[in-house]
Length: 392
Ligand SMILES: *Cc1c(COP(=O)(O)O)cnc(C)c1O
Image (cartoon, rainbow, N blue to C red; front, side):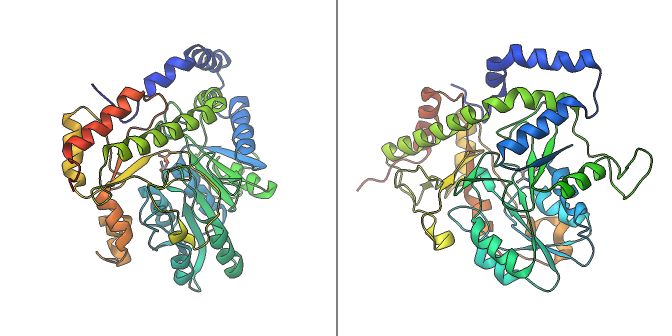
C-alpha cells in the first residue's frame, strides 16, 4: 500500500467539472490581473474569516510582508514571534528591516506562550506576529491583552489556520491583520502561489490595495513605495471553486485525526515513544492545554492542516515509514533562531528548549480529507511495527 502525505489529485477529481469551467472562464475573459474573480475571492474570504475587508496578494509570505509595510514597521523596530514556524514568519520581519524577537512555545499546542511574549516586550517592540500552527489557534485573549496594554499591533500568521476558531472567533479576525496562504498544501490551496490579508477597517484595506500595486493611486502616481503583490485572477478563480468545500474538507481532516487517536490508543503505544497531538476532540490521550494558558475552557476549532505526532526516534520512524510507502514530513527540522541567516541576531542552542525539542521530535502524518480507513490503519500499523508495544 502507498499512503502519500497529501493527495491533491483525489480532491481535484471531486470538483473537476466546476474547476475546469472556472479556469476556462478566466481564459475566455482574458482578464488575468485583479478584476471580478479576485474581488469575489476577497469577499468570500473576508466573510468566511469574520472580517469586513480582504486584499488578495501573491502569497502567504507577501501577506505578512505587506501587513508590516502597511504599518511602516522597519529598522529599529522589534516584532515578537515564535521560532517554531515556517521561515517566512520571521523572514518577513527581517525583510522590512525590523528585528524578529523570538520567544518559546507551549509544548502542548506548539504555539506562542503568552507569558513569554509579555516578558519579551521592550521599548522598541511594535508588534506581535502570532502563528496559529498546524491549524490550532494561539491563545489569543492573553496575547491581545498584552498588545492592548503595551499598545502593540497583532498580526496573525493564519497561513495554516483558515476557518480555525478561538471561542467562536475565526483566525485572522482578532489581530489587526490576518495573513493567509493559498499554497497548494494548505487547507484551501490554489493551483500555485497566492495569499490574502484580512482586516476589519476600510483605511487599512485601502492601504493594502495600494501597496500591492506598487503604491500607485491613481495609476502611475505613486503615493508610497509598494510592490507587485497582486493575486492572479486564475488563482482567485480556483480558490472561488474550492472555498465552498472548505468546511467539508476540514471536517474530513478532523474525522481522520479522531480516527488516528483511536487507532494509536488501540495499538497500545506508550506515550514516551509516540505522542498524539492535543486537540479539542482528543479522547483523553493528551492533557488539555491548561499548561499553555492556565485558563481551561477556551473553545478551539482545530482545522488540522497537519497532524503531528511526537516520536522519541523521529528519524528512525520516518525512514521506516518511507520504506513502507507512507509519506511523512518534518515541520520544521531547524527552529528559526538556529537558522544560519539569523546568526546575526545572536541566538544560540538552548535558548528556546521547547521549540528545539519540537523540531527534533515531531512528524506530520497523512491527514488529507480523502484518506481512507484502510490507509489510516496501515499508517498506524506501520508505526507500531517500528515501535513494538511495551509488555508489562
Ligand atoms: C505556508 C506558510 C507561510 C507562507 O505562505 P506562502 O504562501 O507559501 O508564501 C507563512 N507562514 C506559515 C506558518 C506557513 O505555514
